[in-house]
Image (cartoon, rainbow, N blue to C red; front, side, top):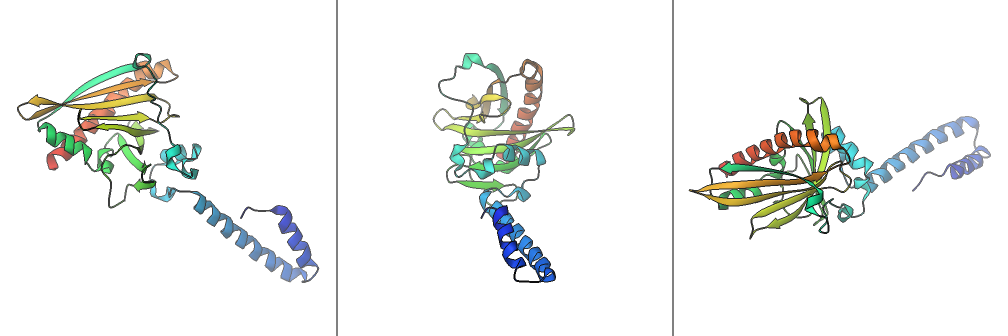
Length: 251
């Protein structure tokens, strides 16, 4: 129930005509405590995300600033990549990684990896995962985690300049193609950088696998697109594939 100042004043006037001043003072305190408890309860009911389970302040601020925790349905979250967009309008970055494991093992390893560990390394920290289908939230200390799937939205905290700068980033898994053995994810609509990243897996012969990591990106800053994004992006994806390589070998 919302706080109504005029209703409070009306109630206090009625009490004033019945009880002495000392009693009114005590009742006023009890009334205030009741309102505070009621308001806090309403606030917790409105929020679908438990912020006490998110370790990174920047990630918490990112979610609050976009009212993601207040959404009735997480399907209201939208990725920045749309089918009508032209790839030629974006900057392109392509890197290739090699693993000494078979294509089937690598594909299954990436598809079924521990999603929390995949995005927890020196430069990156996992904040939380929101799944659109079903409507749910996965935190770092969640015991059971799902396999990688479309409609999952990852919230990460990037550590830059040895942790002096923290940058929140969010992206959605938009495509999983088991035939072409390809994964795609896109930054969210209101992210500073927009675009998508594609991971495609190839048999490289002799039980080895080649992964081509292609990134299409752009922002409103020439400096970011020309220098900052490519430099830090390379660090982040190298560490990601290094982490995934260890997970694949363990499984």
